[in-house]
Length: 353
Image 1 (cartoon, helix red, strand yellow):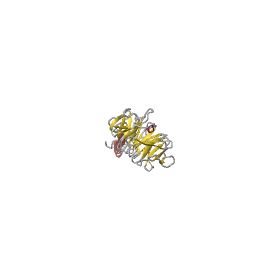
Image 2 (cartoon, one colour; image 1 turned 90 degrees about the vertical axis):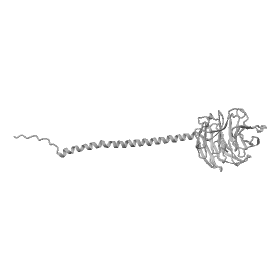
Image 3 (cartoon, helix red, strand yellow; image 1 turned 135 degrees about the vertical axis):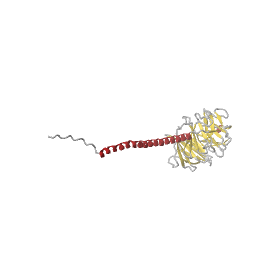
Image 4 (cartoon, rainbow, N blue to C red; image 1 turned 180 degrees about the vertical axis):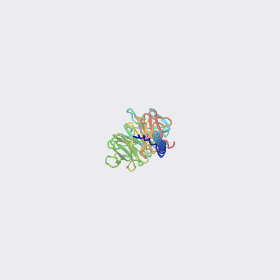
């Protein structure tokens, strides 16, 4: 029987041998595409990082601008009135106000003494102190002070009694108004007196002789209801600004000359205390003092309806340490701040200065 020869393994055809190497270029091209994809991915990551860095930079920039806007270094005007009890000094000045000539008036009194009424010139030099001639002219338990456009000085007592003086602090007359728990007083361009009542949650209006001339803010009156008004000021443009004491803090409300509600601004970071005083200057900026926290004094722009900023001192390093009182001149841009060092008159620097 003839033996069969083992079949030899088939060798790839020429075209098969040539086809095999064709896979190599494909294998080579795959890694070649990877760097392009990685490059695109890296570019996207870098682009995202760049956008993120720009966003962070912008946020830091605007936060810095915001913080700078909140930190106000005031420019001092005149000499600082020293802290003390001697003539020309100020120990516990309250209800600081000004007149059209930028003179400064304030009430002062501690330890059961009869309150004093003092006047200083625009450079804070002492001018005169009120001296009552009769017992009936003595100031008792004062609540607030206001100065009219004509220079008359009105002092409100907590009893509702009002005493009127001329610009040289000479006693003129007295009358009584019926206001329950008066907390603040202002005078408009028509010489009308605006007095806030904490008990009745409203503002009552009187003529220069004490005759009733209206009211607003009482609950349900649809005139911009008020809640526990604790301070009040009237600007030279007849803007009426009231500080309310709410359950969750303080709020400022402004009313137009026709007594319509214009703005309301929540007071931030400044807690209420009986030592808090309020001023309103000719730019309709409110100043509030704060001796409880590190804010020192706060400024609220009632035209814009927003916080303007805080100040801890003046540009020449007069610091407001535990400010016990403050005020403003409604007829000028002046602010007044009394602290441990003394009584300082200051201005907010103009933009760009």
